[in-house]
Structure formats: structure tokens, C-alpha cells
Length: 195
Image (cartoon, rainbow, N blue to C red):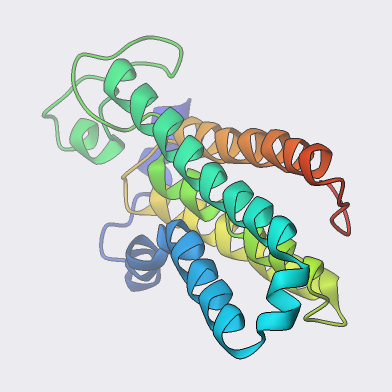
């Protein structure tokens, strides 16, 4: 059934899907951008930074470890699972295997783009921490829409099956929630919401 669905939605020339292929893993850069923000604050507002140094370090570690742990789990599973991509199967160069069976070559399961794009709510976590936006739900919704569009685009271009993107997104969500709760416990700070 999964193969038939992939065959039905496969559209390799979809420009929008390829746009999300290009930007889908961009949330992996969040720790680098956040580090730049912290360095700028340390230079231009030293007093505030000194007063909040421990918290800033813990938030930075939370963000960085979330990205690194998600990538490590995702790419470790990719190398073990070795599932062929839908486009390889549809072109006849490989055989289909369900997600729960280890494949014989390929890197479809789980989806790296899905796991990285599912980390986009880290932006909302940081914004919530500093009360950057009054409408916090809007930013969080945009982050989830970005992740959803990225996951859908991966299925459309034949890079992944639905199970691949669901597993990739699930890995990111679990790692994010676990590390967020750990950061809250370590820092005795409470982000606006732990989801």
C-alpha cells in the first residue's frame, strides 16, 4: 500500500518540492545562528549576559544537543536500515521492503530532511524564552507548517516513503522533548511550554 501511495503522488519535476529539499535541513543551522546571537549580546549588552550566563549556556547546550542527537540517531538508523528510496524502486533499480524490514541498500529510512525540519520548533522555543513575539502560537504554527511541507515534499519527489518521514519527524520530536525537559530540570527554568 505504501508503494502504491508513493507511485500515486510521485512527481519528480515539482519545483515547490525541490525548494523544500533545498531548505528542509536548514534548522540544523539553529545552534550556529543562536551562538551568533549570544556572542552579539555578550558584546553589546555585557551586563545582561553576565546576569543570565548560566541560563544562556544551558539553552545553547539544549539547542545544540537536540540537533546533534537527532542527526546522530537519524543517520545511524539510515546506515543500519539501508532501505531503498521510492524513486529507485519506481525506476526499477531496487526492490521494495517495508519499513520494519532491513533493506539491501539505500538511505531512505528514516528521513534526514524530516528529522531536521521537525526541529524548526526550536526557533519557537528560543523566541518563547525571550518573549520575542506576542503571538507565540503563530510562530510555532509556522514552524510546524515548514516541517509538514518539507515532509510532504520528500514523498512527492520520491525521496522517501510516508513511513520514512514519519519516523524522522518522530525521532526529532522525542529527542527535543526529552532534552527540553532535561534542560528545564538542570537550569531550573521553565520555558513557556514544554511540548
